[in-house]
Length: 280
Image (tube, rainbow, N blue to C red; front, top):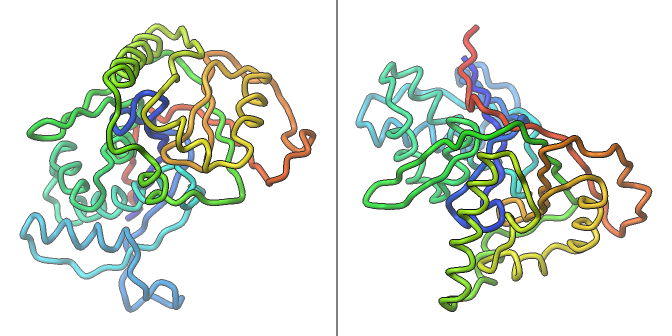
């Protein structure tokens, strides 16, 4: 039994910690018997293993001893939700093999015990563009959108999530909070209408600080706009830079720009269906 889980991009400009999108880039997770393990690295407990075990602990059901094998294309520590794929992958495998068939809402509640980033976890599970609301319980709404194109500019260096959190101010002015609320509403309305504009992604909560952790941010931003981007933003906490357009991007070779760092560019689409169970 396997589970295929999409990458995600979170924050999306003004949607700090609340808006995320699933992308057609995937990791796969497979349950294997421990006596079939031949490779040494399978002996180490990974995040998907922890999520798989946590499901049984949380639901107080009998643990079915299996190992989770991970494969796929989602880069690690680049702001594309690799840890969210592991958590959702492990939990979905446990949900399937236990025959509990828990709802998406309950699965997300279990996942949040392991990583408090619903803006990554929820789109990884249900797909599409998702608005998350933290209340007494986490709530989420899948936003209907027009067809969108996504560019992921992925560098050869990491950005620490912890450092990206530490660099943010402890407090914000009323003006900055109002600014972000208004632009988050503009973003949601623009996504629904399919009329993306540059200011949909303007933000004063995290991007002005975090972009300083991403070498050549301004250069990549210009390259993205020059080649058809309607909006540019930091994907998650970085180091990937995302770009969105409601039209096709121009074809270009990132190597011609003679950048200091090595950047890989992926042309992606929204994954609207989310994680999938693949049965043999």
